[in-house]
Image 1 (tube, one colour):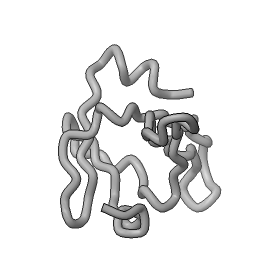
Image 2 (cartoon, rainbow, N blue to C red):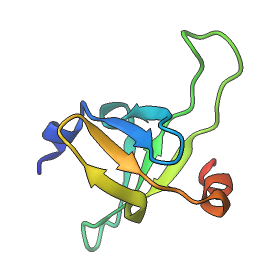
Image 3 (cartoon, rainbow, N blue to C red):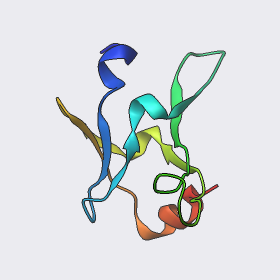
Image 4 (spheres, helix red, strand yellow):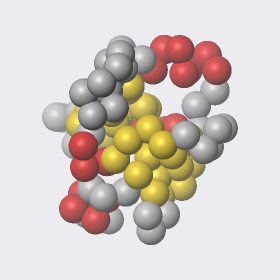
Length: 86
């Protein structure tokens, strides 16, 4: 799969169905020596500039459960979810 095909996919949490972001708005953490993707970094933000800004979320690549036609489903356990926010 090409990165351009993934860019419009939403990132959804398996545990609560929460929409965490969109791949196209996120950054990838890539090992420059191997070319392997280590993590997706979802930028924090606020709703249309209002409210409290969220922290960036780092989602390990191995937390991805399924890449579907419209979304990427991730599973993060409770211990990982606290460590994900950067």
